[in-house]
Image (cartoon, rainbow, N blue to C red; front, top):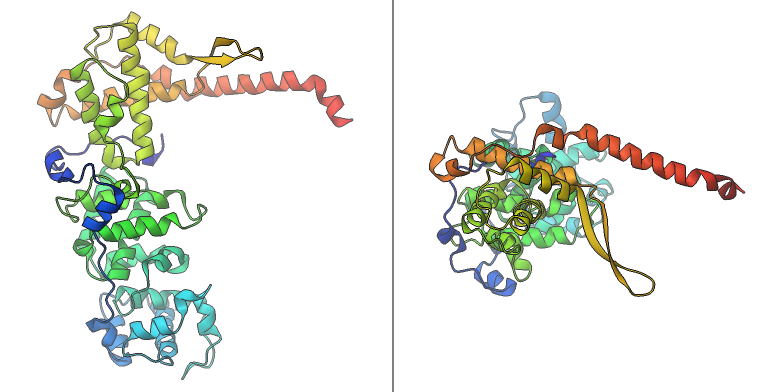
Length: 434
């Protein structure tokens, strides 16, 4: 199981209540939600961008922007001076005006503009490393605010934006969100990307983490959706929104999921479980509570997959074959028959004559089902220590043992399938060669 799929507990004392998180937004269309939660408008002027060049240099060479390592600080200082000298050649009352007039964001690579420009006091253009670090510190110092779409696309600046914003702009807020990612065992890469997306909002709109609004997050979602999928698989994750919402940044009325702005909305944990028509009400409520606890630590596709594995392939299957079951304490014979059904899957196929026949094949991802159920039981056993009244009645012995989720068994089965394919294809190899 990967870091991003790891199931963890969210503190029930800190979890927002359902009534406060929906806030009357359920049932609204994406367009209605956008109208209700507009993004902050772009400012044209603010104190830092109106500073003269000497004041800007003094600001970025002082704490917290200055680096202790002189070998790293030297190219950064050179980059700042070069960028300011280049921007000074364009008309405008502020550095932001000159940045926009210079056409940097309309260029394929704005550094080429600086490289080919004649900068007063510069004998030769600075290397890209200096330019990248120089622009980064000017952004973090709020001298320049590039557009959000450009920040999400320009990797040379985006790469370290989250780290620098955390160091210079709002250390306490970023540290708190970083601790949340660590506590919930969010992977290093998706966690850092989430913090980078939050930093990009601050860079484009100004202010601190607490100033971020729901509409700003929607703009990130729209900006990322236009990027090529090769940028990064986690870039479309709503983790950054959930972090802000969890830390009460977005307000009590913030919709539960960012995807609600893109259409009819993301199904709730209750809706995910109710797809499977679970008859035992206590078991249904338990599964909904469990998914709600896990929701912070995973993206929606993983949450949906978990609801399918635990809700349909485990509990709904037990109810279908053993009507009246109402406890997680499953007898050995029932658990054994359930495992046999998981290993095999039955489906209907149509022959060439149009006849429908049922076929049974081995389920290749059976170990995923067993792993999800085992994690489900072990989580309940762990959570009972913090909230025995809520989870205690369900903390029982797990019907899935360590052998059922062993990788050794799946590796042997995979090798067997590969060997069988080789045996089937080997006789026709001479014909293929000829």
